[in-house]
Amino acid sequence: MDIEDEGLTSEEEMCSSDDDISFDDPGETDSALTDDDSALVDEGAAAGDNALGVWMNIVGEDPGPLNVEFTVNSGPRIHLARDSDPIDYLQLFITNFSLDKIVTETNRYAQQWIEGHQDYLVQHPHSRVHSWIKQGTTNRAEIKAFLSLCINSGLIKKSAIHHYWDSTNPSQATPWFIERFNRDRFQLLLKFLHFADNELQPDPNSPDYKLYKVKEIADHFRNNFRNLYVPGEDISVDESMVGYRGKTPHLRQYMPLKHHARFGIKIWCVCDSHSHYTVNFEIYKGAHNEADRAEENVTHNLVIRLLQEPRLLYSGHHVGMDNYFSSPKLFLELYRANTKATGTVRSNRKGLPKAILKKTLPNNTTIERRKGPLLCSVYKDGGKRPVLLSTAAKGGFVDQRNARGVMKHKPAIVATYNSIMGGVDTTDACLYTYLSERRTMKWTHKLVFNLIGRCVLNAYIIYKEHTSQRPIKDRHQFTVECVESLVGNYHPGKTPRKRRRAAAEREEGAGNEEMNIQPPDHDYQAAPPTCTLVRIGDGKRRQCMHRVHQTRKKTVWECSSCKVTLCPECFLPYHRVINMIQ
Image (cartoon, rainbow, N blue to C red; front, side):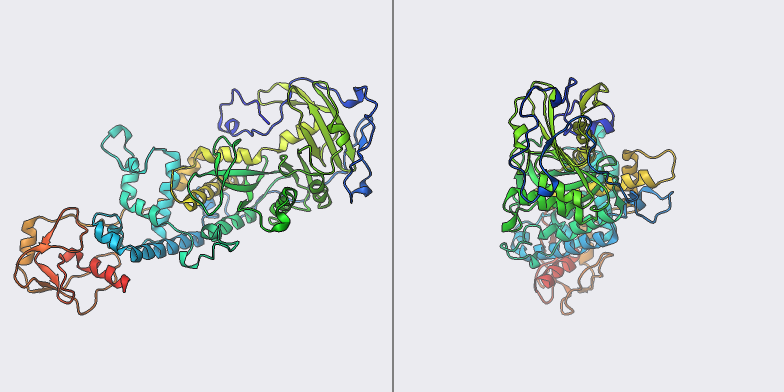
């Protein structure tokens, strides 16, 4: 369904849903149709629902279903002072647990990679990985600064990573990135960024294999989403796409109608229809079992699972969904759980009143049938003939303004659908406004950075509803303050020293026969006690064998035990790599 969205200018208008059903002219109900079959019941009523009776024609004013009251207090569930800073709201989602998890797994993967690529490191003396060996492992402060740069790259968008550190063209320079982080170190963190231990990855035939690399951190974010906010009465269920065209463990999907990302990883989401807060999500990985192979079972079980886990059933919520999910069986089960639902529905779903599905309707007319709490409506509007189902709407027509502000005469069920559907699409539109969508070969990065973007958006929604600050910061300013608070006082660490002049080397070589090298400020693994740095026996200068220098470097020193030619600054890094191999 298309929304009439021409003329939108503000951020909120740009985030409007594309799921509205728009109609141009007033219509009339089927009571004005001269059809002898208008009062016929559906001969294919769903078995098991006989207690509800049969599909009946609506005569006069439709009383609608019994009222289901909304019984919970919506809004944030947090314990923060109302004058808290933006970073306090973001840290509700990106906690120390998630940061420490990233630190642990990134350091683990870096060590595993170095141990498994010794030949590569020898053959590529100028690889950035040598600087990782020299500078040491990462920590929480560095990961926070790293994430701040990732979030900020969504506010300041450039075509390539190295452009953020390019100062050759003053008009394009971004000094903040240069001052806060070393470019090679940032790219090394992107290379080694990890969220799970590869050595514990299950067998490919295991159901846990596909999402193993992101499961723990995704579950952590999902639990925070559920526990920190209770949505309002109107919520929507729909799919979201994380754009990605690379290789995945059978996760990539193709959805031609998703113009933002036709290829990618699908996420089922539950969002508040008005605040656009993401309450719950589930990463799609295919059918779980044989019972889910039938499409109706998949969608039915999925909606129940998405609403049940965050405890949204039995509270009077009103759920909007599209025709991929909707069915009379699902709507009745939700209604029995004190949950209303409205959505478009496919005409081949079981239990629909087939008599009205086959009718020929004049343009701008509708035909409706009711069975207990279920209302089914077919509306003819030009070339479109949508079928809608609801356990909340009444029959008949109402007046409603469209996206242009023009008053339209629409069926009540269409107005209800337009008012609650589109929460997920609107959330995506707001999310992608400030989300860094850098191309990457690793699907885990794409997915986790998408979830981190949702953390920032959810934190801002809670901030708006909870803060006492006036005026309330807009989303851009909120994100900027989060970026500056995350990076804090972090500055780039020491980088590997450049090649010293020959005179300095000669002066160093004129010293004692033996030299004990003290480790620098960052953490190194100690060299074996039997290894010391001594002068080469014949006194001739030879090339340093550690091969990490930008140009060839000769030295008069070697390891007394290993008999390997090494300059003083490469003595400890060389033995650190050797110890890791052993």
